[in-house]
Length: 157
Image 1 (tube, rainbow, N blue to C red):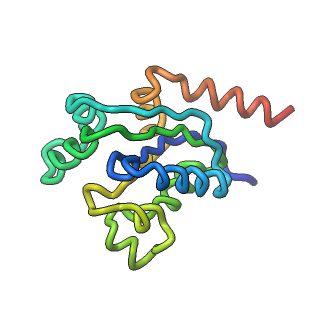
Image 2: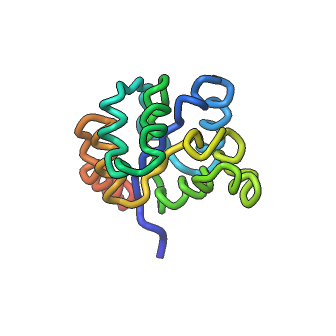
């Protein structure tokens, strides 16, 4: 049985998008991985937007740095589609902790482009529920289930 078709949110954070050749390399890596980029958007969040997106981390010691970095410049949001897309994207970006990734998964995107644990360069949804919520936030009310249903119908024909 094949892995379920999924959508996930991928974010290339401001510390990485500041250098366009890195973004081009990353987009090439994503395409080579077999994930399909079905939507893309360049965004510059205000502080309140970042606070809303990262609300589940409020109260943690790193929250202010996370919000500050997310609102420090433009970033690229990607809707990625494919079988088991959530796990595949998270594997591609690697561990949250950049230095751990450089040691354990030096080929991962965070190991290659991340600067620190807070400025690790990327975000990836951690579940189907998070992906639907986050994609709806970033792509203003996009109906993820409808999109997936349409894709499944196309594939079954």
